[in-house]
Amino acid sequence: MTGSEDVLAANGEFYRAFAAGDLAAMTLILAEASTVTCIHPGWRPIFGREKVLKSWREIFTNPPPVLCHNERVIRHGGAAVVLCEEVIGEMRLAATNIFVLEADSWRLVHHQASLMTPSPEAEAGPSRELH
Image 1 (cartoon, rainbow, N blue to C red):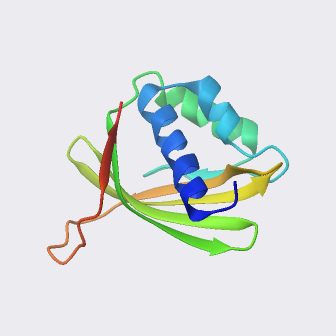
Image 2: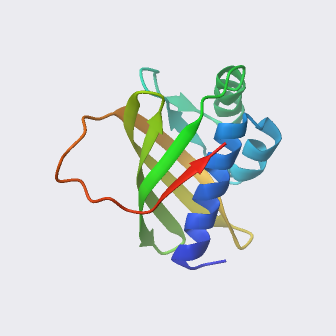
């Protein structure tokens, strides 16, 4: 699992877990051997796997429907960055998801999302609504 398609598959698993409020799936997606970090919109940075899982547990009390689109993969050896857009209700967010290879699978080490304004010049890429 080393190609860009595999990175996109891991990113899709992250958004499926997010949309479903599935903490068990999120636990499997997060890296174990690397430091995990997260910045939710309006939150302070969170450091450490257990603290990040705790933040998702809070969000999963009422998981929102999430639409992820315009995914772009940038590879850096054993790491990959996925830049994408999220739509959650009326909010449009720019997201960065960073994955590393652990035991031949892409595992999430960082997620950050922040509000963005719509741009008429934005490229319309493939979209996947994940519930």
